[in-house]
Image (cartoon, rainbow, N blue to C red; front, side, top):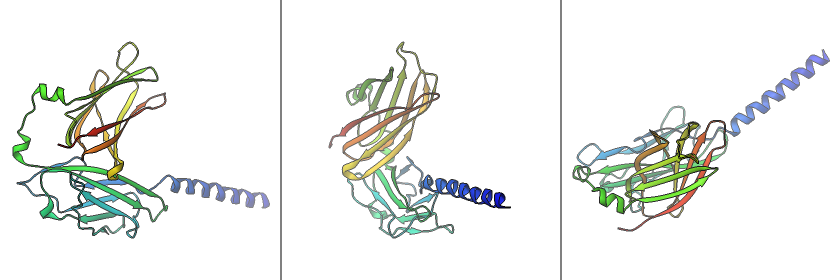
Length: 255
């Protein structure tokens, strides 16, 4: 009986450790955004009236927030953060509709989890545009003149990354990964870019790049939502090897 009792106590302790480990790595992370990340609205259509984020854990409303900034770093939310879902994991703020106009909007959030006590933060973007702007074209010459292009070598991998037209708002981001013999790598699972603007307390904004073939990955979106200096990180996740990581800074000039 004594042995059975000791085994029972040890089993209880092991389960307690496992459960506590699960909580430590939980955190309140976004499950869904409404409007969705990188969505585009037109001024002559119905514009969003609020921002709603569903989290994996319950936010503490006394500490947590959702801020919505226009391209000039001005708040366009009504500072009325509240919990809206029955499971207390959804949060929302309403938007000041008269302040919405053309431009890229940054949704920055911070959450203190009621469940594990940890703080998480992040950002995402959506765009409001005029129909006339969507029909504008940029010549190849103009694009080349405004292209940011750099190359480096990490762990014997040739990394090339390009941003065009390097402006506030929508850009195309291209990452190329080749081996020493200039052949595409076969063990790349995902390529991710993170964007942060510390001066404006924006980020990280996460972009998942799509494979375009021949070791080239690309994404188009309004991830550079304001002027100023941005910290950018590229991560290439590999099978059977450590991730490749490269960080750099870019400056978006004032128009």
